[in-house]
Structure formats: structure tokens, C-alpha cells
Amino acid sequence: MHKKGIIAVISGFSGAGKGTIVNRLVQDYGYAISISATTRQPREGEIDGKHYFFKSKENFENMIKENELIEYAKYCDNYYGTPKDYVFEQINNGIDVLLEIEMQGALQVKKDFPDVSLIFITPPSARELRKRLEGRGTETAEVIEKRLARAVEECVYMPEYDYIMVNDDLDICVKEIHQLLQSLHFSVKNQVDLIEEITADFNK
Amino acid sequence: MHKKGIIAVISGFSGAGKGTIVNRLVQDYGYAISISATTRQPREGEIDGKHYFFKSKENFENMIKENELIEYAKYCDNYYGTPKDYVFEQINNGIDVLLEIEMQGALQVKKDFPDVSLIFITPPSARELRKRLEGRGTETAEVIEKRLARAVEECVYMPEYDYIMVNDDLDICVKEIHQLLQSLHFSVKNQVDLIEEITADFNK
Image (tube, rainbow over all chains, first blue to last red; front, side):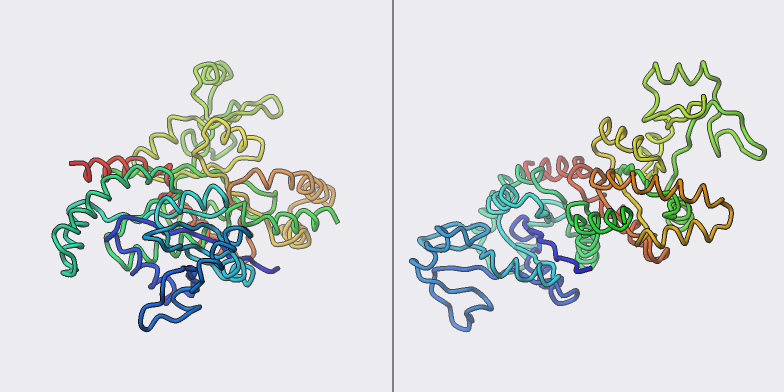
């Protein structure tokens, strides 16, 4: 029997370690990560079809019109979105796909695709989040305060997610998310084909 | 933070290997298995509080009246049921509890306790189920046909479960169920305390 891949959204507070976790899941376990489409100009070194699908404004607006995006948003006059094609191609090939998107986008995805699982990553404490943001050494005190203030606001989204993971020890967190994603394959919504097959077999 | 245990119901076709799987989960990973109350007479070697809680008919009917059972049913003039006390004591002590109950009981549990996860165990095929039932060597051909006929009817319950597990290789199936049960701890319904704690911490 051909096993379809699953789609999971990964979100969390800025500084919770989402990017590192997603990269580890891709490298260590072969998950695919969805590639966003955008109308912004490519930066140096960015490759079309790898980092982003670069689109003209007309192209992008046509994708919106034709319902070709899982979700999209506009920031600073540029569109960003998740094309359906790439994601559905992966899952049809049996590959699980991770979508790293922010919270309002995640809830939009859940509304349109209720079978998608939403995973929220949090640091163990506010103190630890501050420590990590300060430890990066790349952000000004002002930016750090802004991110912490946003985290305070973003707490309200946590109960809307399906799973809450604490990123305390990175290795443990990556392994726990991998085991969770594997377990999701047994979820009844992902076993529809198996149920049909077993039912047909027993009724032969 | 004190972590509460979870409750999972294990059901499946007769001959799917439920009993063996549950015993392995208890022995290898320390899960608790709920102890049923019954009004039937103890058989030789059966210990009260270990194999069953043996109750008089009056006692049992009083438990029903006082809403002290998670589910109950009457077979051959005897009551069988799952007392709440024991199960809730275990999960309050952080121990995950398995309930091995038949399908109509399982759906009753889900209705009254929507946070409980229902796990359905199926053999890989009807042919394999027949082979296992015949392999036991303890059942007459008539009983085997009866059980297979019941499995045909029971297929309709599969879509009502939360997770469908195929018991092809016992070791793999036990490990997969263990990983599933561990992953369920991250489910938002089991992370209510964590969400409150994190939210309070960020809002300090």
C-alpha cells in the first residue's frame, strides 16, 4: 500500500529555535520543508526553487486568484505564500512536509486544511527566551524587547495549536517532534486508505 | 511541574493481539492497566484488586447510581465495568493508564471523556487473523468462524477510533504504540497546565 506523507506546521516564539529544529528534522530524518513563493527581489546567493519561488506581482496575484496557495500574507508591500503544488507533490510521494509559518498563517492553514497538524515550539521559560535572544549577539536591546513583547501577545495562540513542544534540550526536542510526526501517521485521518483496505479484505 | 498521566483505550478484532500488546506495554514501559469491577464469581487463582474488583450486585448497582464507573456493561447476567477511582488515582500520580475494552464500551468512554485516546489494533489482513486464530489451537472451527464474522461487523467501528495500528510484527507494534502514547503527552489537551505556566511566566 502506498503511504501518503503528512503536513505539519511548525510555529513558535521568535528565539524558540524553530529554524534550527526544522533544519535538523530535514537533515537527520529526511523531512521536506515547503518552499515559499514571494514577490520580493532575490538577495545575493538566493536560488529560485530552493530558497524561494520568485514571482512577479502579477504571477502571485494570479496564484491567489486561482487558489494555488495554502496560505499567503503581505508584508512591506511584498507577498509571501505557500504554493500547494510543491507540498502536495511531496506528500503524494510519501514524504512528510514541514511548513514553518507564523501563527496567524498557521491558524488560516488549519481552517482550510483541518487535517494538517499544528506544532507550537516554546522555550522552557521567558528568562530562557531572553537569554537566547541576547546570546545571539546580533540584535539590539530594543529588538529583543520588541520580540519579548510580541511573545507575550502570542501566548494566546498556544491553545489553538494541536501540540505544544518545549525546546529545552535541542536533541531531545528534535527527537520528540520526529516521534510525534511518525505517530501522526497512525491517526485515523491518515489511515483512511488502510481502513478501506482492511474493511474490503474482511468483506471478501 | 507535575505531569499527569493520560488514558488510552485499546480495542481491536479478537485475535489481533491486544492482550499480548497490553501486557508488553505494562512490562516493558510501566503503563498501568485498569482493573475491572465485576459481579461474577472469582475463578480459581483470581485475586480481588489484581484481576478484578469483585463486587456484589448491590455494590455494583450502587456504583452505577453514584456515577463511579467510566463505562459498564452486562453480559450473561453479570456486570462488568471500569471504576473511575483506580484510573484517576493512576493518572494523578503521573502514570499512563490503558483500558482494554470492547468497541461499544470504547465509544461510550469517548463520549463521556473526549480527552481519552482510542487506539484500534488490526492484523495486517483477514487471512492473517484466521491464521492466528487457527494457530492458537484452542478454538473450534465454529468459534473461529464466529470471530471472523464478528470482525467483519466490527470494521464499521474503525473510523470512530483516533489511531489505527497494524499488528504485523509484535515488537514493532508495541514500540509504535509506546511512541504514540508518549507523543500524546504533547497534545494541547494534555498541555493545559504548561500553557498556563508559560503564559503566566511571559506576563510576569
